[in-house]
Image (cartoon, rainbow, N blue to C red; front, side):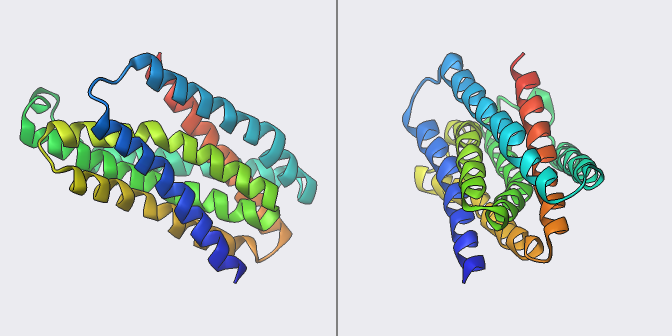
Length: 220
């Protein structure tokens, strides 16, 4: 029963952030860079606070530093692998990005990338709830806020490419479902032992640290 609750919470927060971003993307005609930067900075600050004051202290409290370091490194490597997979398998030729057809492809590629990235984020939520309700909710809210600008980045090229709003929202919601799937597996894995929970939490810290640093670099 607890696993089902965790899965539903991961599904809700994962789809809510991207869906809200998708709605903003199709409703607002002009998107201010300051607005997007503010959301990214706010979400990044919140995620860093969760990493420093929740995830790592919680992991160190139930395990040793070696497991925490291993989990953090695995989390970073996993996110690097996700980025490489998206860039190599689903990249577009830059000179064709102004074409309407390729704008649609761009939006679909972004949605695939988000779906891939949302799975380890779901793992973080699932293992976080296994550690404590407060930690799980902190992670879920931080990830939800982080997904808003990503939903916008998915919806805008789809809209400019001529896709119907109903289809855009459908794809945006679909990309967030993997968060629920990740939360399901994170809850199962985290229930094995305290050591596994610690590794999962540090994995989440590494993944979120990579996400924050990459988003900051992309705005510089």
